[in-house]
Amino acid sequence: MHDTNLLQLITDDFAPAQHLLQLLQTESIALHGRDMPLLEDILAQKQALIVLLEQHGRKRSEILASFNLPINRQGLEQLASQSSVGEQLLTQSDVLTDLLAQCQSANLKNGQSIVMQQAATATQLKILTGGEPPALYNASGSFSTLVKPRPLSQA
Image (cartoon, rainbow, N blue to C red):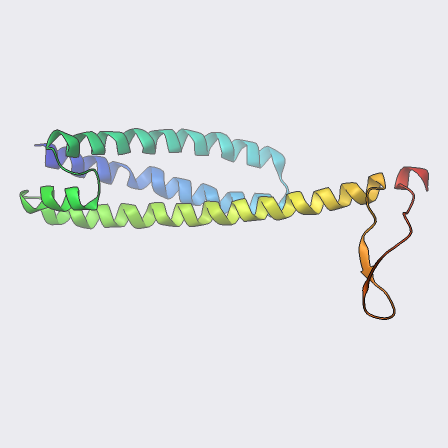
């Protein structure tokens, strides 16, 4: 009985996980285009999906814990070895794990994109506000800083 509930929880997570992956891919495009309204919408949708996936994950963990099994792949394998739907449990679990790994990878790429954009924005702000001058190569090929330029607002 619990094994079929566990299988149902796993298969129920396919749609939200696929939707999350699609949102992360759309988020990547929105980040490059700096489409803030779209990013805000994506963030709200992502949060709802993550909460749902976390709830189902806790339920799956509770089922394994109710059998005094480890709450990991090994515990799932032990349950599957005693279940009539054991092969499906393992197969569907692998599919969900792969899907969630794709989501994590896409999220990491989006995070790296955000960090790069923050660094570019910080550099642009320094130029506009007359912060520290950029280091450039001089005629001899070594780094030299230019004379402190005036802020753009004073130019």
